[in-house]
Length: 185
Image (tube, rainbow, N blue to C red; front, side, top):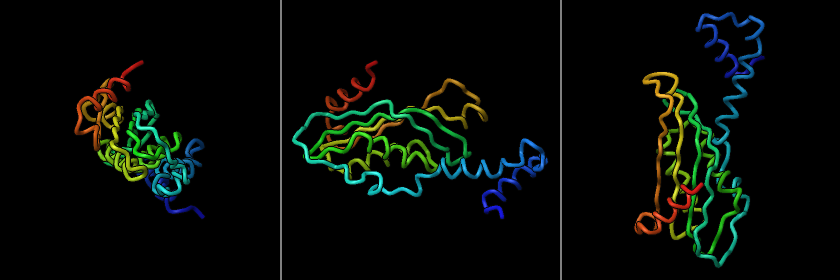
């Protein structure tokens, strides 16, 4: 028996005017349902499971940056992908987070139906709550297929969003240092 998502995909394909029994489409509802489950797997993750106790005491106060984290998400308005990169920086305040956990936090929120603006804020707020740093900076640059494939059809447009918390918001020199480091080749 097909699950509900497979049945809905089969119906959608038929509504497009296609023959669901055509050789190339026979297994498409199953594949499409599995793909959508994977692309939205962030709904089934929690911060605790993503961090997996990888928060450590540290006496460093210097900026930590992870840049060029690949990002794949689905626009909640059209269910089309947006693809880009995320840059995350924070100034520790007695604790650091495991390096891979920053990328996992990005993925946890990206693998949901999203808008880029919210995604940027969620990543920053989550890192702030996880390690209570003196500040967090997040910048996302992404191309949106909803703008590239339909509507205005602008192929080279890139959307950039940022969220600056704590010292990154208050002190332009700290924000500038982060942005300069992120923009270095």
